[in-house]
Image 1 (tube, helix red, strand yellow):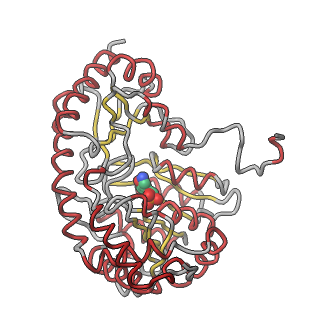
Image 2 (cartoon, helix red, strand yellow):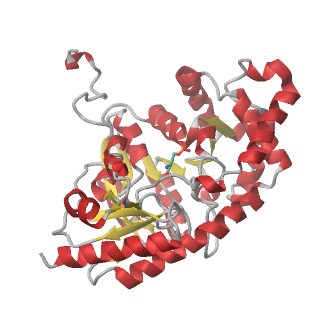
Length: 400
Ligand code: PMP
């Protein structure tokens, strides 16, 4: 195949960014801090099975027919209500809610709607690797803004905007960051909106972990502070129900949603009706809040095990973020250590542990002194054992 037949966005010689996460998953006997997936044992399988049956019983064969690009209005009404109750977004109606094929498609459609080749956008450093995969396809010019313990550095964001007022798009993970584990402070949420208004850009607030808060108090979404319709709020059922539903939802101004529907139609016509109806029946007959409370009750134990193990085992000079929810902790090591080399040369072959090295999470793949650790996929005993080994490894690596 002539590689020059591909569009420039494909870059056939470059592997997908997500492919970079998978090789370490092959080590069967390792304690894997690599997961990005929710715990399978906590899926509401029985209730979801019933919800699919209910959906089919209600609509008969029509369930399996083509429907419309926007999906069932009842589901969008429920989500509009949830956006107001849980995300503190004001005046949301079904017309402000759009269903997407997972949060991932929400990211992709927003990027497609905004970015011409070369357009300037801001991403956090580090940021969600799947978002980078999608943005890459639109060939933007990336500006990175560092992630701090209370969210992206808004001073740096402002300085970048002053220098590059052509920036039109900011992507941020506001709650329990993937991969950073941190949550944006209230002040920074307000500041992001203030800057968006002043410098005329769109904010995509991607927050699939938002309701998985185990300690501390929930903050209003960035969208709560939006005064000019510049913020797009994005959530997903993947982490609070199950990823296979492939259903995300976003809240935005109608003017934005209209453009996104054109792109949704072009991409895949519509959300699968049976899935949308099953989710609708699930929400009608079960309490999502109760289910989330159950998840949080289990995950909090694992998060606390991780926080305790970081304090106990990580040597001086190594720092770990302290999450209040979500799936991840981010560890930063000495600049001299390359966490990709450490993983393949030492961590998996000798210590039988695996993590995701930092370079995957940067637009320019040039930060090599960090690692993402998942804590929701392991038991507290596994977390303790694995972190003990990581501590030993880093103590040893620091002395090399
Ligand atoms: N955004 C973030 C920050 C994520 O972590 C993920 C999944 N890992 C997604 C979006 C996409 O998830 P999904 O498409 O399953 O909703």
